[in-house]
Image (cartoon, rainbow, N blue to C red):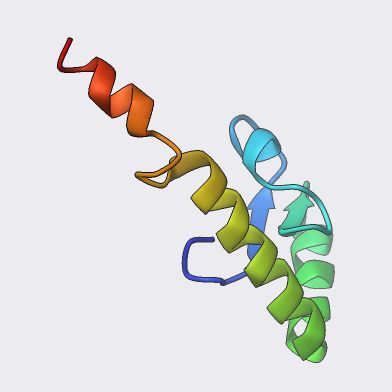
Length: 77
């Protein structure tokens, strides 16, 4: 996600909290879901770009140094 690459992930665990279906990637449950998601990404450059950009923004919001400055500073107290 940080590299602006759209995500296709299994619909389990932490993936469900990070990947927003059709916003920054696809969550799938079986081989058919993987195939459909990958076919959509292969055939639609605009979709790839959009999901990739949204994924990058999500990573920056949650995991960047700027987003976590207070957490890092609290380690020194």
